[in-house]
Structures are given as structure tokens and as C-alpha cells.
Length: 339
Image 1 (cartoon, rainbow, N blue to C red):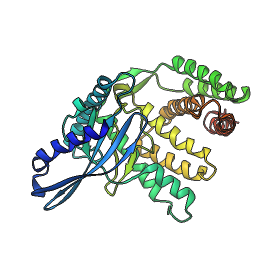
Image 2: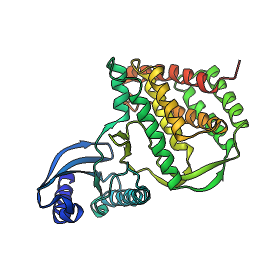
Image 3: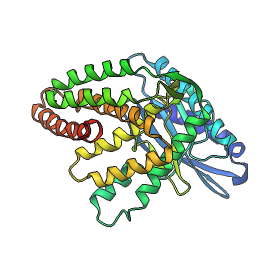
Image 4: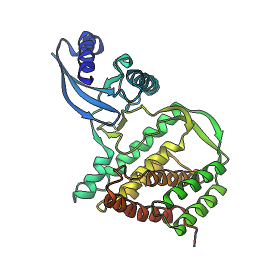
């Protein structure tokens, strides 16, 4: 099915290639050079060869799922609209980091755009952890800073009226997550530390928070580091309005969660988070909210488990043990009361 969709996409791009890239001259060929299967979609990489160079393109083809073709078309249409909106906002300010959409292919259940070429920030972090001398102590900081700047620009360009911050609702959500995590092995002492620390932090927090479009998936794996800065290619989970800090909290939690791997230490994740926060621009009062939102995201990761079959008991126990220790350390750093 996906192969048939790609044939139609390539045929359409061949017809419009010289209009999309008039400076490249005559089109010679469009090649599909690779694909990556994901649980909900496929990613296809394409190269358009012209007489004056080439261009890289990417196609995201949604799987039908339980709802069939209608669901994939609906998902593709939503993402295309998100991408078109964000690309227009960034382009109007001459800002890089958002791929240009190459047409509306939602009828085929696909989203097609230019490809941002670079290295995922998470890959840079893994290399820095595993290869001595890979990171010169500046490249990761610079990449994290650019990620913070990109997210700040995204939120400013899609800003909405501020909204009241529901601190009690967040505390209630934390309590529920802690109860779920207790079933995975999180002890009562850690739970008490998390809830008490969250109450103390939110007592000092502002009563209103900035609102904007929210990506809901701003993670190191989805951030591409390029020579010009950073880029984000996936807008499938974006919602038009929400609490802006949720994106920052997702990023910080995803970075800190990498510490569950023994080779990725606090020195690496710490400087990435620090540089990101400085570039994003978070004041002391806002950091209190951000710490609690980050803990909520970490607890959500823990409560969801590793996603393995129930029969793989040993793997589930190992995952729970590692995550329990990690959550306890994260809570102690972020939410423990001052001595």
C-alpha cells in the first residue's frame, strides 16, 4: 500500500519539480533512496536530481490503522495544516528550522516536505556519552541553546492569550501518576517527596501561564541539528493552543530520562538542560512550574512502562528497577525541600 502511494507522490513531484525549484534547471530524476518504518507511519527519503544540483525531500506516509484509509487521510490533513501554518510563520520572519511543504498529499494519507539534513540531538548526546573526545564541551551546549531559541520562536510566533494555571489540577494529576507508579515499584518516601516538593514549588508559582500552539513531541530525537541551527520536522501531534511550558517540560524530561542509560551521565544531560533553559528564557517563578511539569512527564514515562509483552517478566522487572531509581534521583534533585 505504502509503495503504491509513493509511486503517486513521485509522479506528482516529477510534474511540478521545475516549478518548485526553478533555479535548479531541468529535472533528470526523482529517486526514493530509503525508508524507515515506524509504528504509525513510514518515512521515505527522496532525492530530486536536476541539471544544476539536487534537492532532498521526505514523505511521511501514515498507516491505515484500525479506522482504515479515512484515519490516515485525517491525520495527514491535520499535520499538513500544522506544517503549513508553522512554515508560514517562520518564513515571514526569515527564520530557518521548518521544512517547506511540497503540496497537500493528505488524500493519499501522506505529508511531503523538503528534508532538513542534520543529526538528531539525541544522537549527539549518545555519541558524547560513548565516545571520549567527541564533545568538546561546547557543541552540545550550542545545540541545546539553539533548540531553546527555536522553541521560544515557535511559541512567540503562535502565541495566544495567557491562561489561568490550574495548580490544583496538576497536583491531582501528580497524585494519580504516583499511585500508578507505586504499582511499578516507586516507594512511599519518593512519592511523598514528589508531592510535597510539587506543592511547595507551585505555592510560589504565577497564577497565569503563557499559551500558544504546542508541539507535544519536542524531544531530542525529533530535533535535527544542522549547520545553520536546529530544525523540527514532525508536526503530527501539534495542537493549536495549550500551555507553552508543556513543550519545554517534555524536552527537559526526555533529556533527563536518558540518564537511565548508565553511559549517559548527569554531566551531559545537565549542561544540555541548562543551556536550553537559558536560551528559552525561563524566570525563577516560571522554573517552579517547569520543574513540576517535568516531573509529571517523567512519571508518565515510568507509569507507561517499557511497552514489552507481559511474558517478558525479567525485562519488565529490570525496566522498573532502573526507572524507579532514576525517578527517585530526579525527584531528589528537582523537588526535595531545602535543607
